[in-house]
Length: 129
Image (tube, rainbow, N blue to C red; front, side, top):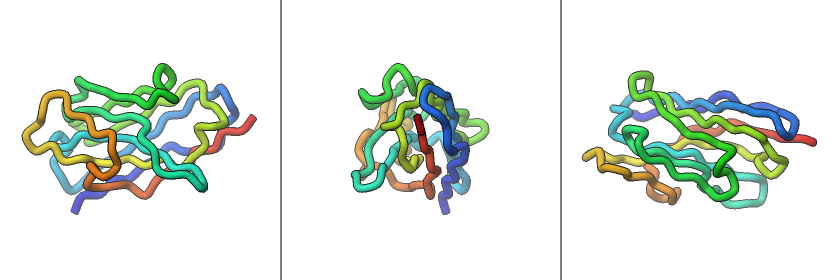
């Protein structure tokens, strides 16, 4: 059974940096493209950042490009999201997801939630002024 566990959320002031981690277990981590999504109250879950199985390709939502960085460590089965210069609108529940890529397709990054096979329980990020 694949399990994803996020950590690192918290309450911070605008402009501060925060790092999230997502640890995977129960699977071969390198067989998955990974992604971070977020969901604010009353809004749909939205794509934040995604990374290919080997970390060579990354995609970002326009709203976070240049401020957030996604990375992964396949040896540790962890995907990270470094968030710099946090803004009030970044407040949300952040989820990591795993999208199967059994053939390790070059450059595959999943941006749609329905492409993901597994999700973590989420970690809350609250940004205040």
